[in-house]
Image (cartoon, rainbow, N blue to C red; front, top):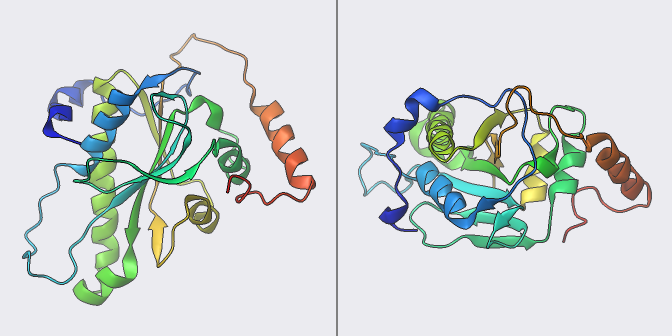
Length: 223
């Protein structure tokens, strides 16, 4: 991903908000997806010397569906990389919906891209001490704020959630070696006040429970 994708994030400040009325079905472009991830991974400056053996870095794991030009799947993105790395092909939204079904507040099928900032606590704590826990989460918070600003500029809705079981989501994303999802950022076309559509969530949950009762693993079915 190149600097051509850079957005003037400060211009999004007056528009920045958290989606209140949920999302609606729609398609976003490959360019919009790239601009979002570029924004998430840029803008970080550290006073830690480059010679340090462990530098703080976030990666981003994404559940992608409904993005024009990108096949549905789970992808990882490391800031500075020109490409998304495919982790697992196929639409994983049904598995995610099963995992977060107890929250009942959003329909995963209306979200085009779920972005999970991913960090690793143990190595950082070993090098920088116990307060690394706070620093790691501040890094994630900074990336999330950039996602909100980018989404606002692109005319998309954005909402952050911590309402998910961490281990189940880590397994779905294929994380290992101490890596963990720090938050879940939902991005897609926003449903504004006064806009209505048929909510398919109850039917999707019934389908998910039916599949689960047949002995299929809830978070490994897409492998």
